[in-house]
Image 1: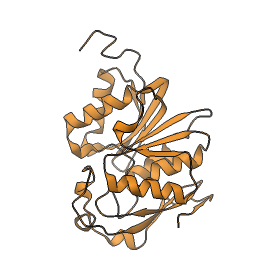
Image 2: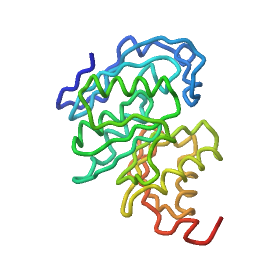
Image 3: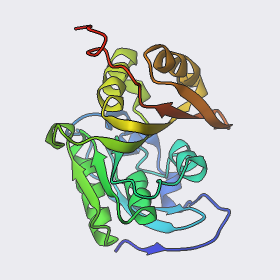
Image 4: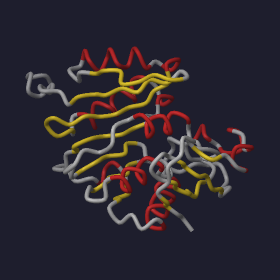
Length: 235
């Protein structure tokens, strides 16, 4: 049973039996596959933030199934709160749902789109949101989001390990669905290319600023670009 409680704490997340599990057991390397081949090993983690506590069901074959990822926690601790009146929010690469559930709890009047390609992760995210009573979360595959939906803000711990070209394609697709004035908030490890990614984003027209840095992670704010490649007459 998933539980959300409002708490005031300086801790980031609680580590229990899940902290003893290795990447080899959890099958983290398969998290970007639509159907992970690694066998199911259900588990539970607890996300503890200054304003809420969320227990989440996890499994092998999903991103950071053994514990709340440090980058994800950093994003939720130091990233901005959803703005008042934001209608459409996106968790890009939702996994089992720590970001989506936190956004939905913090902004109950917003619709939070939780998107992933991993079917096991989608099932977990859907179950976690339902157990928490978060009926403003829409869990779906990328292809099932209507083309006319744009987002006031995007939060993401993007899948850097899929490779630079695939990552650039992924970010280009979704950043161009930011509404005018919208912003994306990304967390990326420095040694996995956060600084070069920030330069590429800026060069492509998405003005990018570093919001915060800690323990090898960069938190990037990415503004919607004013001119798209189509507007510039590019194919």
